[in-house]
Every structure is written in structure tokens, then in C-alpha cells.
Length: 111
Image (tube, rainbow, N blue to C red; front, side, top):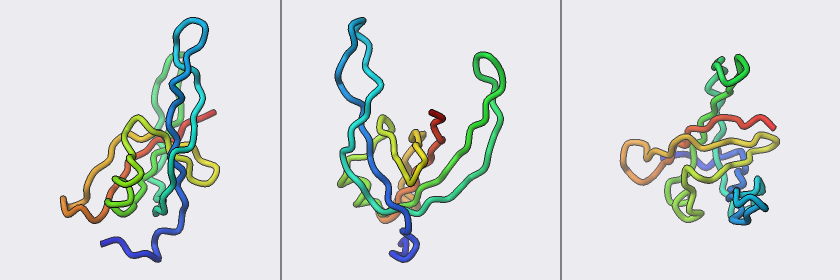
């Protein structure tokens, strides 16, 4: 069970807008759909080759209560904002399959 004293960060859940532009593509706008308390843990930096050259990607691990994550309806299609960091969710796992603690693997989105 995750201790309440470790949940020091506030995470804002963002969902992509369903609005379309003139060409029928989804617009790049996000709206707030919920929030929860979490523990933010930096997992380090990795260099990856994307398009024009190397890019830096920073990984984070969020820990939160499982029932809270399910209550806000968090999925991999959402984004999470913690402080000034915008995070893309890579995966959500139930630690030890006990429905007590969720581990959310994220990558920082560069704006």
C-alpha cells in the first residue's frame, strides 16, 4: 500500500479534444478531465533517433492509488500534467495485482 505522505505531487488528467480542423484531423487541444495525487519519480534520460536526428526523451514513473486512477478514468490515451511537466502515458500497471497501487510509466512531451 502506498503511504499518503508519499503522494506529494498533483497530477492533472488531460483528454484530447474531439474537435476536427478543416482537413478532418483532430486539433491539438486538450481539456482537463480530472486530477489525483501521486508520487513522481524520475527514471532518467535516453537518446533516441527520431526523424531529423537524435532527440532526448525523459522517462518518469508516477505512483498513485489504484482506485483513484480508476475513478478518474485514466487510460493510455490521456496526458498527465504534473507541475510544469506534460507527460504522455506509455502504460499503466497494477503493482502486485492487488488493486492498491498503480504505476504509470510516462515520457515527457517537449513543447
